[in-house]
Length: 109
Length: 116
Image 1 (cartoon, each protein chain N blue to C red):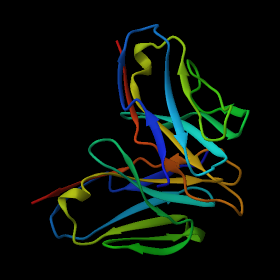
Image 2 (cartoon, each protein chain N blue to C red):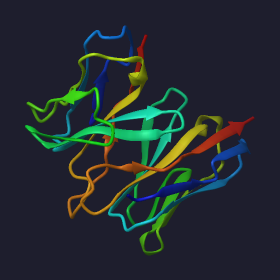
Image 3 (tube, rainbow over the protein chains, first blue to last red):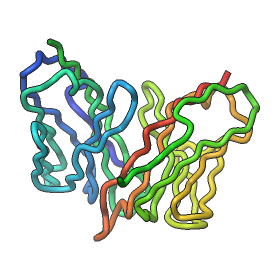
């Protein structure tokens, strides 16, 4: 099956700093999403981005499908950004989203 | 508001006592699925459903049952829970995960289940 790797695995930032999270996948995808899992365990949809670039406030994402990677940018980080960030992909006729290994982000004051 | 609703959010139960976790979506989605999340193992699919009366096994179906009698509901049934089913469970729905109608999947709030 498809492999989805995220980097870095852990990230500690001071409030106000910027960061880039990366998601590499091993096969062509037709569905890619970024999620934020907050400290209460909820999975929050950030972006549906199988290709191209999107922005939502301080967050933006870019997927280069031909090169099999996606990037999530967080600018001016806040403590509420803490949690685990997952990318998840779906290939061809697959019946599920395959989740990456996650990036655990901690934003400190 | 478009959403996927799971109940209960938290549950502690004893080994062998049958339980059902409900999942309901209000987006008229055809696809629904259950995942479990465990430390070190990530999120793994338990069962999925492409439409009413159509269900199939995911990666870790043992010990679970599902049904899809109505489009909006997709309950997860543990007929005889065991401690190794202690986990965080998520229900998800989507119009479609692939093809020209591929859209994003929405996840419920999660159900933390502890089996003692």
